[in-house]
Length: 115
Ligand code: HEC
Image (cartoon, rainbow, N blue to C red; front, top):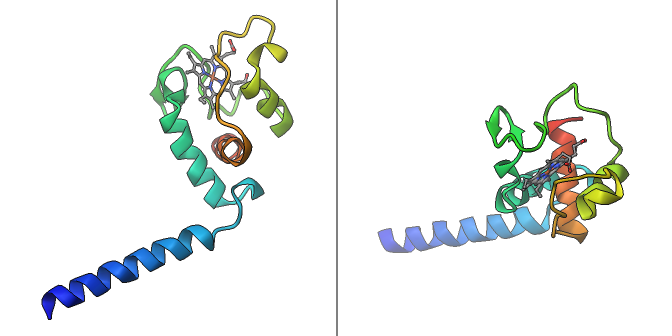
């Protein structure tokens, strides 16, 4: 009986997770779902090696949640991430390899930490 309840609880959890992911709005709509996915991509891509967020991270690049940083449009940041030299002549940041929905989610996250 115990085991069975365990399995049922597990299945309920899986179903819940599945609906949570599929029921989410698409990553690119600027919603919290996209920003959350974007935060994970930020971690996976090791952006924190060079950038501080919330006071933690590397110092080679600027802190990405600095309210005094120059205001950039989403388009500017998208182009910059794909090809930093297209926006900053002597850019030292490597191009970001994520694209499509993942890139949009990353942009959602960046917009959330520094609106
Ligand atoms: C090897 C270090 C390094 C890594 C890794 C890195 N960056 Fe950067 N980033 C920089 C530097 C340095 C700058 C300053 C401009 C330049 O030299 O390109 C910068 C600038 C930026 C800017 C522009 C800030 C502005 O408005 O001027 C954004 C946005 C940004 N990085 C996001 C990211 C994201 C997202 C990732 C991970 C996918 C990432 N960076 C990974 C070094 C890095």
